[in-house]
Length: 220
Ligand SMILES: [Zn+2]
Image 1 (tube, rainbow, N blue to C red):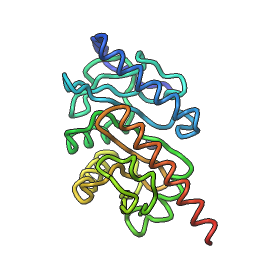
Image 2 (image 1 turned 135 degrees about the horizontal axis):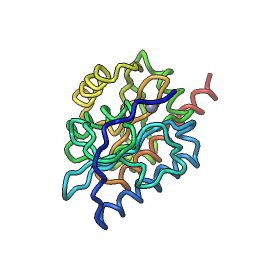
Image 3 (image 1 turned 60 degrees about the vertical axis):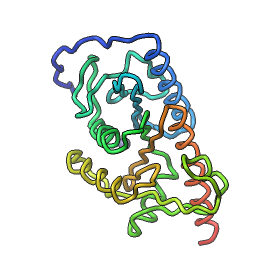
């Protein structure tokens, strides 16, 4: 289906530091594609430059295994496109709500892995996936011991993103120590203070989701 052409928007004004961060973001997206976490153009990736506060996000419908800085859009905190010519993803609004409610966030990754999809359904009635007593929990910011109970809140999936953004804001308020939010049978949003920090959180959470899923299937 042909998409309506957006109003022509201005070209992103890159500088050396921003391009370096954009390349790191794309490298993280490529790695997620290699690991099978963003199949069939799923997922989206963004970063917020700490110095300027400018936010950049992958556009809609791209193979995340081959995205380049040219595929990014610059958005503001309200998720309006400031620069870039591609079409924004409907999920852009969920990045905006996380940046607004977690001021220290420097990057957000969203992936659709098999393990996060399975666990988001398995624990939907409980409202959160519990992860506890695993060494790798220490990869999450401010967690210093395996004797930690991480709760990853689960929201019902929806295609109505304005309402979903309000739900995400509620989950961020209700789970102030959370490092991620799951959408049921959909995927994970995780964030961190930097691109590297978010990548570490994603790798840790996906490892823990897989371990927990396999443990539960072994015991059933
Ligand atoms: Zn998604």
